[in-house]
Image (cartoon, rainbow, N blue to C red):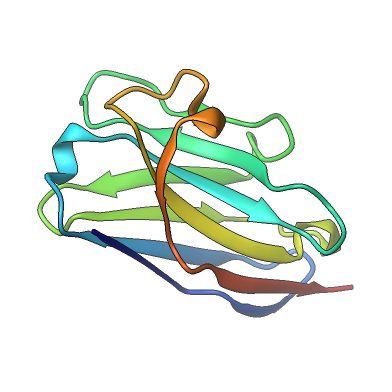
Length: 124
C-alpha cells in the first residue's frame, strides 16, 4: 500500500497549487481519501475528504471550504487537492491518507495509511 503526494512548492500569497496523491496497492474505489496538513508547531489538521460514490459531496474543513477543492480520478487512482487564494497561514506539510472505509464521517480518526507529505510554502 502506498500513497505518494506531489505538487507542493513555494507560491506567493493569492496564488494556487494543485496537489496530487497517487495511490497503489489497494482497491482504490473501496476507500475514502483525505487530505491533511501540519504546520510547524501545530497539530495535524484534516482539510478535506472524498469517497468514491459519484453522488456524494466531499467534506471540507471551514478553514479551506471556499478555497480548496478535492477531486478523485478512479481511472488513475489519484486524488487531487486544488488550492486557490493561498495565504501564508496555509504553509504546512500536506499529507494524503487512506481512510478505513468508503465514507468520510470522522475521517480524521480513521486513517489507515499516510503518505510521506509534500511541503507547501506561501510567501507574504
